[in-house]
Length: 204
Image (cartoon, rainbow, N blue to C red; front, side, top):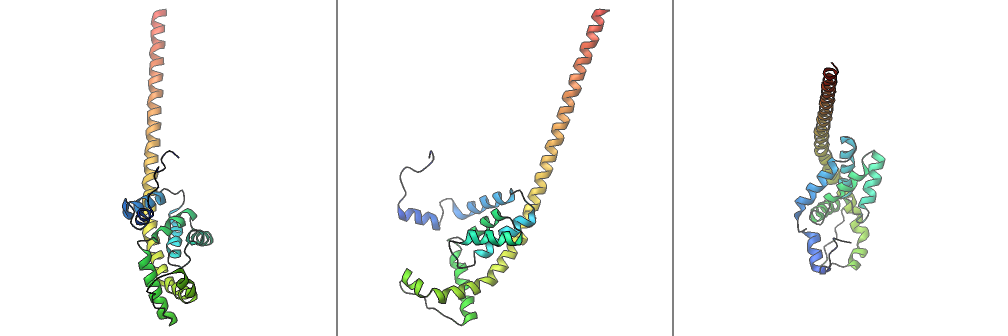
């Protein structure tokens, strides 16, 4: 690959860039916004798909968010690609807030409380998986629905405005091309008429 990095970055550097990207999360979100606006679909379907991705980000099924978001978008009639973009709302920068709020609400709903370990390990995770999974899932439903609705209300008018401006630009470009083509035809007819008149004068 031409642009592939020659020297593989150290593990700590790659981990740091995963948590805090070199170009910042703002640039990543701007890129996602641009990609989403340009999707060839209706504003409702795009916003609904994105909202599905946001909602799934509040579930504890890590590693399956893309699949679950696509399935939910398909069931509800949303845009599947937009659902994949929506899952990026759940990222290393936001997961502490998402997980913390989901577990806090879930523990209060279920009456279950699992004290945080002094040394986190996979063994502790598997040992407490059942206790954590249900509170996380239940506690994430409310915040997930609220955030999904908020993003739907935000994304739909933005996409609609972008598509409206794009249609206006395309129509203006089409009118400009028609006008230029008509001018070329008129100029061609004028040259032809002038040539015919010159030929008639020569014949006379």
